[in-house]
Length: 270
Image (tube, rainbow, N blue to C red; front, side, top):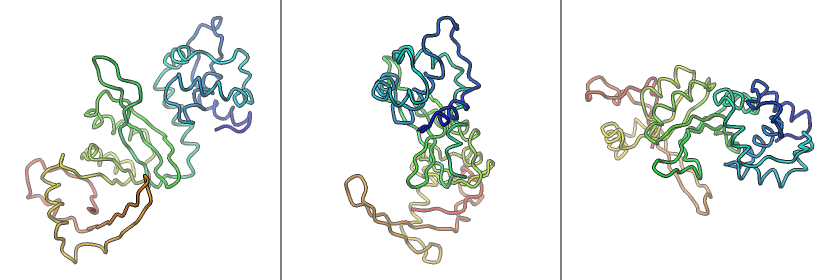
């Protein structure tokens, strides 16, 4: 959130590569004002153009600290038209550049997950989904990347596209079971990161092997269990973590056809 006119200019500097797609003589609401409104409202949690305009109406004094807004705010339809007329790939690149500047050094954890956008259901087709990527450091939930996808099953192809745009050096990338794919693991490792992938029944043979192992693990193959207690979602949650660093038996060459290969697999955990 900007705190001074200089800060607002710094924010908009990241979007200077965007040109106004409208005919100049028909412009009522300057593009920098539209950008500042949309960016500030989006960073404040607004999720559609109706919410963005309502947010702006309640914070007009704040916005006018940085830009004049002489004609007030455009309608939500105008906001929609202007933003959708911008080059989407260039806008995504500008936004990523801005958010990257907010990160304090290399991320410890990068969490990737698919979410369905609110109020995007259209008759006769499914809702819009995006693959979101956020900084997972405790106390920081900073979204700094996304990739659109039509349906949940397309997340498998969208995740590698998102990973290619991120700085992964030294980071741990976490993804749910949908992303437990060899090509995704290979992309993360190639770009300098490590991965923590969920294993569920979508990998039935490997999943069954790991379940059987943890049901009665050899004492010399596992680390000492670690337990944590947290107060979350209105309840006390206790979790116990068991880790095994000996995974040679899990990646042997004589197990079953088409077994997925995960590069540099170092451990399994429950």
